Length: 413
Length: 143
Image 1 (cartoon, one colour):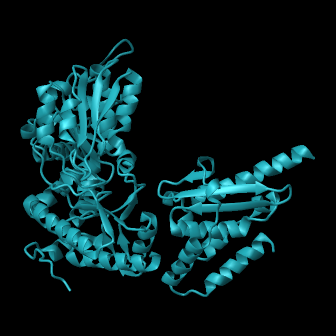
Image 2 (spheres, each protein chain N blue to C red; image 1 turned 90 degrees about the vertical axis):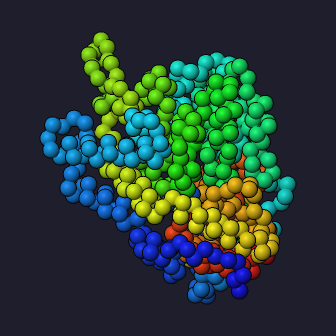
């Protein structure tokens, strides 16, 4: 009985062929992978790129005069350019490669904090942040005797923008908020929030770990000052990610780590640092994975960002309706603007119990606090069940999740 | 009955199930039916915080054997905690310290004791052994 209309315009069967892992069996069932907000699967094209790099042109970048080093350097810098175009940065030098969003935020918290944060200054974050966008600021505030201020969240999972506007003072030095909540799926109105902050001359960092996987980002039209992302959440390899930083800020920020690559001249009396972005990329960078990330971006462009967004929203709508019709389910986070991610509770069943049984049906979902404990506290819960969808997921897979949920209810209630 | 004999008994009970769902239904029954701990003992000091589920463990020592009681907010965790309490409760500190608890693996629930699961059960076993060590040390100081 399927009365909910589904989008047949997206050729999911063809797309699925690009992801070899989707053929894996788990506990004797074909895998249903609904943990895409944790990490996404990799298309064959990305796997081939990594293989190709190590087989044909592995070499260290930026130092060798030899042929392979030049090929590797070109590919690595091409990857930077690819990311800069995806984010519409004004120059590829504004893209710094790191291991991912967490490292990006730590780098900025240290480096920006070193110059711009002083005793008594204030940093604004929100209740719905991932721990990675809370703890680095807490540590910075401890180091600098600065103050952390927190934007409250409304019952539907939307940030309280009125309260946000009231948090600014002459001491506010930075706003750090997520683009999309990993725990609730809420898409924050970041353009509006950036405009508010800029009206107070306060720069804004966007944690884009959950943002970039769902659509292109234009840092120039958003006018944001930092935008952090993770490659592995957008179909690229693990261990690569980075951030966009406004050049005028990057130039004023000191290096985070030191060593090779990031220096210009070294003597025992004085070391001068290389220019942006290299001053932030000490040591041999993650060359292979950066190139792999570029392939992931190419792949996403080929599938089409608009098609991806449209289909993912269909999956979200379908799952939301199915869960609502099922009854005995509480959806946590009902913002009008959501990414393809649903956090919910099966009434009367602990999320871990539900997750354990659902796993036995070969369905990968996430349970727990999603590294967002303050948010769970806000809703008076210890955790949720989270299903997060990617464009290779299907309506039939959502039906399988629903069947598993009914089994859970039978077993526990 | 020794701990090893109890472990053997549990393994035999589980031999009966050839389907994973039957096995879990049994664990769920164990988790649901048994009031394992006095509500008064569900204190913060008896709480073992897993990332995913919470476990409470209380220990009483009568000078000879330790009696454990425990609980969890997740039913499957509670069911497995119940089996661990059944195996170790009523034994001397030495017996508890030497227990291998290999039954968990043998009944196919090893994944529930992986550190990444963070359901509190790994810490619960560690805590049971710590109680045994502490009571043993205390008893040896007295004698």
